Length: 334
Ligand code: UDP
Ligand code: MG
Image 1 (cartoon, protein in one colour):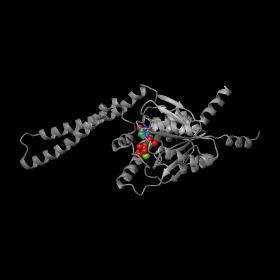
Image 2 (cartoon, helix red, strand yellow):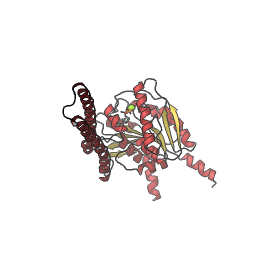
Image 3 (cartoon, protein in one colour):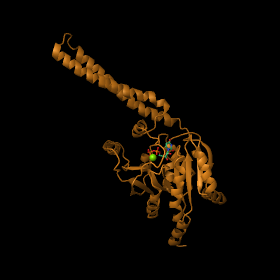
C-alpha cells in the first residue's frame, strides 16, 4: 500500500466528537442538539456528541437521556456533582472517541455553524483550531479594556502565548487531546493548558452570539478568580484573606499618612518623630501582609496539587453508538 492509499484510508474512518459541558442548561439543550445535528450530519463522517452533566440541579440530565433514546450519536457523562466547566470539559475529553474533538458551550454562544470551518483546517493539518471571536459591538469599553489588559499581563508573565479573544470553543486533534489529558493539575486554567500543549495551531474568526436562553453561570467574582488563575478552593480562602487585609492596611496607612501630613503642617508636631514612625510601621506591615498573601496563593495551590485527588467522579457513562463501536474494535485487537 502506498503512502497515499494509507492517507485516504485514514480519512475514511475518521470520527468526530463534540464535547459539551452542561450545567443547568435545560432551556437550551434541545435547540443545541438540533443545531449541532444540522451541522454535523452533512459532514458525512461518523460523529458523536458527548454531553457532560456537571451536577445540574434542573432537568438537564433527564433531557440528555431523552436525547440519547432518540439519537444514537448521543453520549452522556454524568459527574457526581458540580465540578466546574474546566473539569467537566476534561471528563468529556476523556470519554470521547473521535479523531478530532470539538469543545463547545451548550448555550449556543459558540455557533455550531463554525464547526465545518474548524474541521476543514484540521484536515489541512492543524492540530488545534481555535475559534477567535470578532470583538463584540455590544460590549462595554470597560469589559474590552480589562480583557485586553488581562491578555497583555498574562502574556508578559508567562512564556506560553495565550491567544486573545478566544474561549474554549475549538477543535483538538487526537494527539492534542491525549497530551491535554496527561496534564492532571487541579487548577485547570484551560486557556493556558491548551497553549502549553503546543502543536500547529490556527485561528478561525467568528461572531459570538448572545446566550440563546438561561443565565450565565459566571459572575464578576468568578471572573476575578479565573483571572488570578484558578478556582478558589475552600482551604485557600484564609490565605487569600491575608492579601486583602494587607491591601486594606496599606490603603489606611496611606490615608492616615496624608492626614498626619496635613495636621502637622496646620498645627505643628508636639511629639517629634511619632507620625512618621506610625506611617512607616503601618505601611511596611501592609506590604508584608500583601507578600504573605501572595505566597499563600501559591502555597494553597501546592497544597491542592499534593493531595493529588482524582479530578472527578462519574455517576454514569453512557457511550454513544460510535463510542461503543470504537471500544469493541479496540477490545477485539487486544
Ligand atoms: N458550565 C459547566 N459547569 C459550570 C459552569 C458552566 O459545565 O460549573 C458550562 C455551561 O453549561 C456552558 C459553558 O460551561 O455550556 C459555559 O458557561 P456559561 O455560558 O455560563 O459561561 P460564559 O459563556 O458566560 O463564559
Ligand atoms: Mg455562555
